[in-house]
Length: 320
Length: 256
Image 1 (cartoon, each protein chain N blue to C red):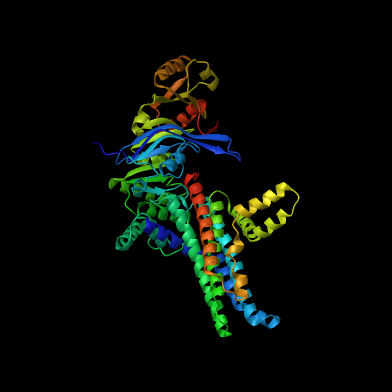
Image 2: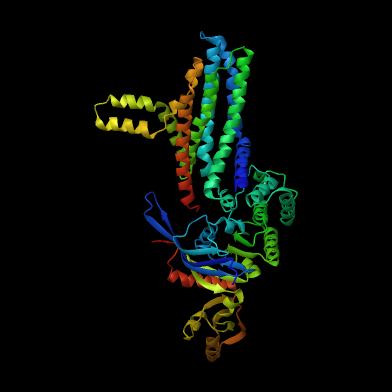
């Protein structure tokens, strides 16, 4: 029999009721189906209000789904056994600020079922991993944003979880903090931990994720590995043209994706097939083609394109 | 599970201990009990009665204020500041979380009550006055009254803000102490609606006067064990209902 997946959701939907009489409804998530395999680093990518945090909160039983099903290692999110297997770092984490870092980790460890010498040893280990040993006896109210993020990550991994769920783990961190956070995520993956994290910072996704789901307006609009998502796009060519005005370019009858003036030259982006037609017509008009190269289609391009497409058919994150 | 709950309860006590408001209120309460001696110089009543009145009155007043402050802000602050995310995502049920936080609250109030009671007993001993059974009953049953108020504060705090919780809990404190008077007054009214309202207030709200044995202590009147048992059981029963409702509300809500 196959062992259950770390995370599996089926047609997960969440509608919030707002207002004093709760008569206004906002759909935050609609029919989200995900399967996350063991050992994967899985990214949830999307703009603000895409439903990323709602998905994570449903998985952590902080929010209850309106319909659909979520499972963690085959268990319901409100099953305490499931939560024993998960480490969670919320967005803008807020640990008890009257505690010292060490006391906070002690509390987190004891709540996760650790105790005695094992807990003491583990506290020392995670303080070292997050480079918080020196600040461990300071009250958390004296910590910087980066230190709070580190101590919060330390509490998430203190019980050696099999699944890490991280909500915007690098947000608000300086470049060094971001690099350290990425390294920690990668070292957890090396250990075999499955990681789900959500972000809108695309370089983090490119650097860390085995697979990515793009959410827009509460709906899953793309899913796959970064390579699959990017290579699945229609190739785009970049051309630099001289001796032809922008007005003339528009009258050539070739579909262009974008044009940009670079002094007397024009930087034009068009589809691969259309580029040959464009070169011919530019030459016929007496212009020159000084450069032709395939445009690198990045995840960022895909992300922006996806958002544009989804705007035209948005259903989620809206008042219904 | 019990270990996790005990950890949370102890953490609640630690939180209150490090809270400046708690420390200030506790210090002021201790000063009030000790200051009762000064009032003995400016009164025509007997010294023993003044010491008892002021000592037990200070305990009740300060601990009631503290109970309202702590209970009304505890859950709502956890939710507003989002500290709750890293705790309820642990393998502990929401009901157990709430009970553990309440236990931490009651431990804090119990420790301060004990400290004030020891000071009060020391004062009586210094003036060579006996400690009556009713003094002991008044101090012990005060803790049950504090539990009832804290349970109400917790219930309010599980779905509303700190200010709303504090205002409503304070209202319940006064209405609970005056429910007998409200009932008597309303029954003299010609309006059927007012009579019904008075009756509803009397039966729905907790009768906090039944948990008030300070008048007995002031006159050194012995309280029967039946009366103590009835009062304590009704206080604990009412608290259990409020805690049950709080668990129900807290367990079913979303933390956005």
